[in-house]
Length: 335
Image (cartoon, rainbow, N blue to C red; front, side, top):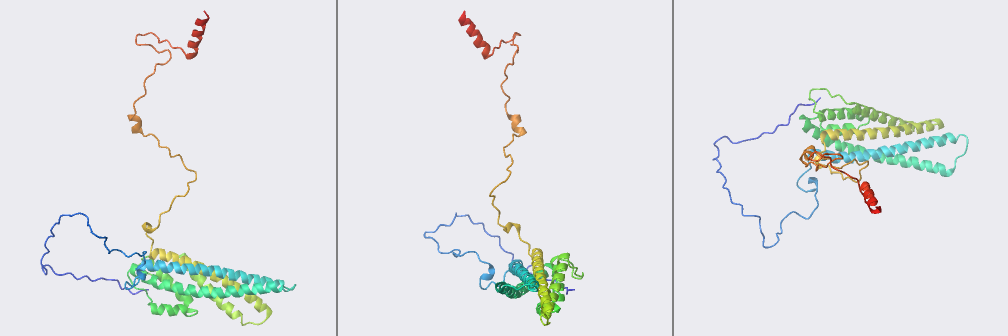
């Protein structure tokens, strides 16, 4: 599986008594903030923040940022390849429909020219995007293997100089690619070095899709050498199936790259930009309710005599409403 070569760091410390004991530092009284007679000319340069890779002399970035940056590029190219291959498959299906229709009726010249243009354009763009996807994925794979080795603590089973040629040899790459990704996933999950790699379901389906894509591509190329009208029509269907398999393989590759990148270089939640609330739908009642402690500290309301209540002497307190008082005043005026 892998050679067990743990990453060790040797630290040399002087023996006790080799150097005199350091003297305790004297506490200096704080004189206050610095003051300048003229504005100082030193400080940070008036430049935007840049990655360490853009500064000469500092070398490459640390493995996690390097893996995330290359994964972003690889996923972009892979999703582009999936879209272009899907459009190429649609163009091949349209060409096959025109071939079936041409058996009973004549086709318009403009329709045939448009179909041929779509097929040639889709095939050309698929080859260009496929080459870019292979290069970007291999570039990400080199950085991911190094990050996986640092995380797991042991070196991969295959060195880089053996990996890249085996990925470019037709036929061999269909077998080696799956084994390499399975080993990378094994290291990303921090599994022991002596255990056999067992690919997950996503990696297994990706392996099957890549192998099917390679076989269909070889069949589509070989089918072009056959002669006959029916062989040419069947070649259109085989090419459409090859393009569709390439789209599925590219999409699954993008998902695998994203998953392994998340395991090798997880994103720090503190570095993610915060979201801003734009609108709140179905806003709940935000009125502040009175707390029990505030209700207990509130003074009780003043006591009011109720109807028919007795005075301190025992007699009932006469109460009249405003209507009765007004009626009595009116009767007294008539008298």
